[in-house]
Length: 174
Image (tube, rainbow, N blue to C red; front, side, top):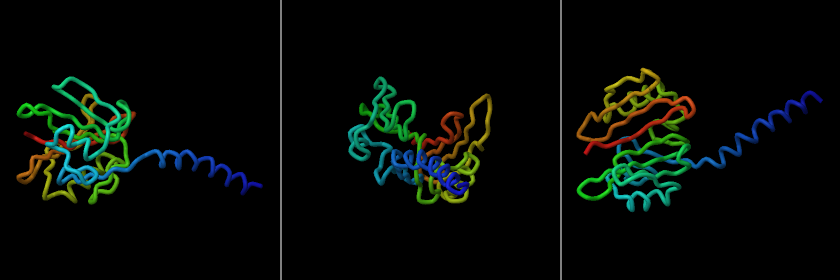
């Protein structure tokens, strides 16, 4: 009888986790290239980003800070931010808040704590990124930042937000 009770409790605990896993869609990111799901995103137009990632779930903002995203506005997996460059809206930042987001060298990046993410980027992307701001919490903001080590223009900012957990952003300097 006791064994049956334990099995029933385990089943009840496992069902919500399995249901959540089905609803979560995994995405891939290549931090060295700024690719998402195998598609170049940074520098692309709105049409180019949606051709690569599919129809977004939301679109926000004036043309000066236009954003599109997948998931809800307050609980997205990916958000792409655009700015006007040469008269055309181009993607310059990709934010990741909900996972799984898998990188070939890091695994599920959002499953890591920010200190673990920082250590993994330092160990596995040493040729691409240099740490310019170690992860730390100051005045309620917990962030760290990597800058490009080579001729790349890609930056990586990461941190934690109490309700969300770990987040990171890949962005490009013009």
